Amino acid sequence: MDNKRKYVIPGDLVTTGPFRPEQNVILEGNKIISTTIGISEIYDDSVKVIPLTGKYLPKIDDLVIGKVISHTSLSWELDINSCYVGFLPAQDVFGRDFSAHADELTSKLKVGDLVAARIANFDRTRDPLVTISDRDLGKIDSGALVKISPSKVPRLIGKRGTMIQTIEMATNAAITIGQNGWVVVSCESPEGLLKAKKAIQMVNEKAHVANLTDQVKEMLESKGES
Amino acid sequence: MASHTVIDELKRTQILELLEQGKRVDGRALDEPREITIETNAIPKANGSARVHIGDTEVICGVKIQPDRPFPDTGDKGLFICTAELLPLSHPTVETGPPQPHVIELARVVDRGIRESHMIDVSQLVIKKDKSVIGVFADNVVVDYDGNLFDACSYAATAALLTSKTPKWDWVDDKPTLVEGEDSQLPISTIPVSVTMGKIGNHIVVDPNGDEWDIMDARVTITTDSDGNICALQKGGFDGFTQDEIIQCGETSVRVGAKIREKLKAVQQGGQ
Image (tube, rainbow over all chains, first blue to last red; front, side, top):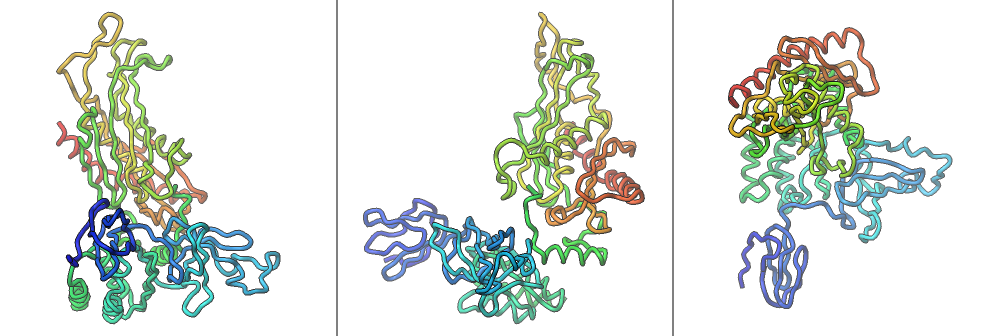
């Protein structure tokens, strides 16, 4: 069986046989056909296609970076770089004794604020429910927002976090990666910030290249000397 | 479109902090426009066309030249009409449907800049007085949005007009008749250049990019002609400009416009 990764386009036959179709493939008879442009991967009993590009689809427990775009008297709406709008209920921030009369939502979060949030619930029929009541979640007060393609997020993290560790170590930056492709970089030194941003953009542009970690390392070190 | 985007607070703070130090978010000087590239003849079948990039903003302009009925009060002048349209693919907030007020404003500002500079000598575009004149239609299509559509559309329309070829029509049997093989340049008398400036806090920046556009308090678009005369001006936004600021903007538009005019001149010479 051909286990090698290959590039596929929609309609391409990925493989045939008794496999379980996972992401971005459909099963027709015993043929497994890709539904997107990406790299196909065949495992022992399943097949999937990792898309080269695409919008973010929320998954429960994903960490995302959201931007407050609006609010009602009971909840905020977050732009989470998806076709869905993140729904953040006021109770989540004010606690159980939240009162729509007494509490003003803008006192905690206002339009334009960035938050690190987690997808609490999502079933594709309603907008995803997000929460910020956890450690390391909540409003982001400093740093710079970098936007990359959500499909490149796994590459930015790297195998067991190697890529992101490389960047963080070389620049002394703290990087928060949202699964939705939004990344917040904060760093004490402006040079480190610039370098980290550049490295993230590099990963975004060259996600398909092999040995990318080495290339990123090289870039980070060469810049450090100049 | 731009009015519906919400810019994140971090970006806003960053832009404001940098401006306090006299710097801009993309490293430009306050009076420095982004890189402008102008490609003419982007649409081979049009009478004239141009594709203009200002940074990541991209506009395509097509010029159509055809006989038309003159307006009743200006039977001795040809027509010039400039329009603008935003494609839904240009920005996530753009929708199809009738044009939004800011798109109508865009078309009018671009039209006025070219019209009031008297770039095209419309009195030479008459086939038969009061009966038939030549109409020049410049249609701008925004393909990609990253701020400052006024200048992008203006340069696209100007570049397209500079390189347009107009066919010749004669008045035969009470109707305009095309004379084959007698194409000529449009009667061009000057090259208008618009320069848009945004006011963010107390700072005035030339050619605001998409992020700066979203947070600016006021803007002014000033069009100058080849002699350095101001021939059109449009102010927008909720804040105002002081008298000194307006004078400064006027001077900036002449100075910056002169450099951009050189690019348009090169386009004109390349097209002839």
